[in-house]
Image 1 (cartoon, helix red, strand yellow):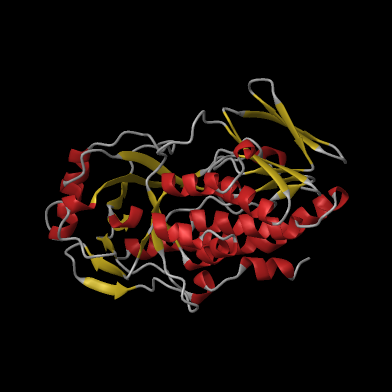
Image 2 (image 1 turned 120 degrees about the vertical axis):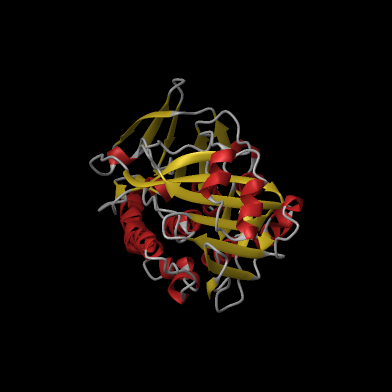
Length: 376
């Protein structure tokens, strides 16, 4: 591939999607991930119409349909099961939300890259740049040089400090139990349905993933201490079941009673960053805009970032990279900030036992590639 070379630090959904999108645009891109293997990380997440549009442009929509579970309904309920609203699961142009397992999505993206494009066991410890190139140095002494470096290394990004003054993530006061279970354990679960229960202090979200073979659950409770978020922090299934017992909907109680393994992590975000790029370095995904999970858009916004960045770097010369990254910031910062702020607002709505704001046309009908082309 001719043109600029891109070094992506971080092999999560955002970093991998960026590599796929960049290579689809003819841009050389390699991913450097600190983990020594990409395994069963995380649990489920929702792919919304705005990111499914991107994945279709990348030729991946059919693959998503083979690993995910399409939704037919999204009910918001009081704790006792009384339905208070029904949220849209699709956009105006026919894209429908899917539940997917993170590990399945990681595998899909990795399989869409050449075998030599992913470098594991590479922990970033240093970054330097000059007018002509940028260099990332890893803990093992190796280094990678490129015309562009993308920091897709999460909420605790090592590279963020090279763009803005470092500041600590903001703790929400909430913690979440997460996990998956075989769907057959809950035979009463409505086919392809999403349910969200809320009592003003606790919430439970459940939906299918992996072709409906698994149910993904996320249970939000108050946290007594600041827990550093981790996919692998252990949780107590008995405490989970007790938190959602009593007067909760029998279907919700059935779900939590069947949990035999879970993990728990503290929920953090950050205030909106004033800058996403500096010279040849740009931030992407949670490194740029970590958000509370109350709009279901964290991974979806990272996928939008990926396509936006790829579109703006297509055909760009090495000399024009800093200008292209400023255009990327212009494209993405305010939209991502709207989701960050909206997610915080949804916490307030749910504390008042009101339905969250989800499924609006501005969320689902957005075409990031088309918007990026207006800035070229």
